[in-house]
Image 1 (cartoon, protein in one colour):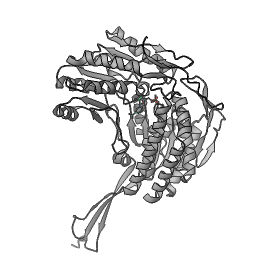
Image 2 (spheres, rainbow, N blue to C red):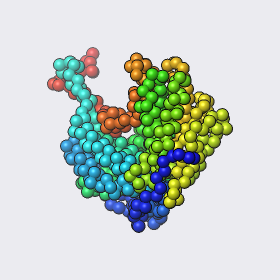
Image 3 (cartoon, rainbow, N blue to C red):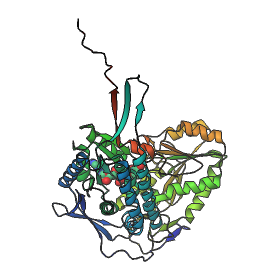
Length: 508
Ligand code: NAD
């Protein structure tokens, strides 16, 4: 492909020794009982960057038992909000002090640009800080309208032991959407990061110890889904599973957890539409579309991968997006100028390419890119910025997650048609609307089936604003006050004042 911006190998030093990850169980670091380990190679540089203890069922069960003991002991579950907040704030400060070390390994394991990794790690520290505030301000309800001799209260208690299972695309950020909120609620946790990106989660274990979190409250087990994740979803000692990942694994987890009726919170995939009306500010929309599709190499649940644009402006918008795509810096994630890094694995690269080929075979047209690419000096896998137009709603590329830097463009004529296309999806994670007419925007927001609707913007997020999906994008919510509620159980207290209760047993 001609005319695109490629950042060649930066020559930045990669640590000579891979990061060594171990399990954190009951406050102590452990190798696996078998002594086995697994390696992660950088997807951009193709060198070993971490070597982790390979967990199995034994480690998962030990971690669950430690979490159960710590929860039942009350050491954290009955600690005051002030005590919990104090530890969470210390963790936030320790994360901030460690941004460089954590961002480097996050980049090396995931292939994301180093500037983005730095932003995600320091942004995650803010999630810990926000959760600390919730730990001190959460409360239940009181009812004093039940009569002069009655008082009712609904109190909130931690749900118990929580299994946290996370994916590879935002390893530390997604962990921080869950763990500090579970801890603010008073839960004990078992965490399993993705086998592709285990290291920042293991690093966090060290920071939790340093911050003074009692032993057993957070346990970390490294390894693969079937060996480590599966027991975390079936063990009777676990009260809740919170999972972020693919819809297929999410469904399997919901089924596995049903055997013991655990609460299940799921953050799954998306096929997120950005709807662009003819009166939209096309320059702003084109820039946001370009950002939405290439951010994190499109390996993003919130990827704005489905553009639904009004016929009158479709050509102009596609031309702008293609021109902008050529300016986006693809290449070595260790170069601070790089905006888009590597693809997570060769197998995934093949899947992305297959989606584009299938779309072309179904009659779509590639307006830009559409093939793997090489970055001078790097042995890893990269994919060209790709725009596919002439997509129809029935094509797989319009319906399924590609999870790569690939944009599909569909067109519409009326608001009703745009909404029908928006809602014609199994997913319902997020959606966007671009128009200068407030009535058009509000009508769209009210009728779009999505957990988040962005208006004249894309992918802005704040700790205060909750996040989650409808339909097959998941169940439950993360961050914001609702994110805390997920980890709380409510208990009703009914209290009589005095001896006013009339006897039930009558003397006949
Ligand atoms: P994945 O489903 O393959 O794996 C996610 C995690 O589940 C990993 O830790 C994996 O080891 C574990 N796992 C696999 N099988 C398991 C099993 N049987 N039992 C328990 N755990 C198991 O997902 P991925 O490829 O790591 O991530 C990509 C997916 O995540 C995409 O579909 C993306 O849309 C989704 N995602 C969603 C959100 C969101 O907030 N909605 C955010 C990020 C990613």
